[in-house]
Length: 145
Image (cartoon, rainbow, N blue to C red; front, side, top):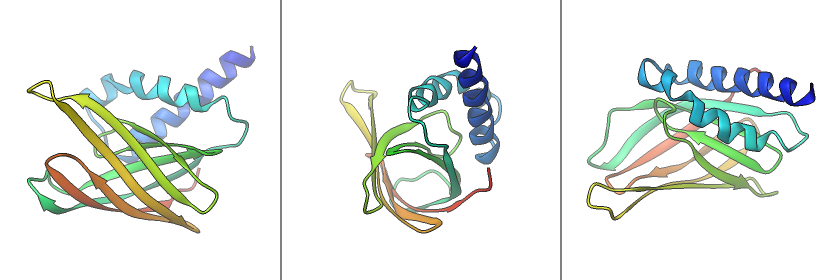
């Protein structure tokens, strides 16, 4: 019964993240991956805090600006840039410094590193999201949950 409640709560969180980033089609079909990442975060007793906002290109060969979502639960974070089909896992330290990463295999089988380096100041998170092709400015504000 408790597991079922956690599953329903996590499904609601995934739905909120998908709705925040305006995901469609493929992202909605792939939300199962994000569900299992959020399920891992459910081990912590604290409630989640949601943030969302723009991701703007700074340098490199970049995709157009997008909306990202970030969830904090205890000291664990989940960052979903753009459509939410990818999710970077990370941590937030007591000072508010956030780091998250995801490494995928690249087209040439070389590692393709995605990173987030940011800081939280009250209800705002600012920082840099980087891929091998582009650097983005991230500005997220706390969402009402």
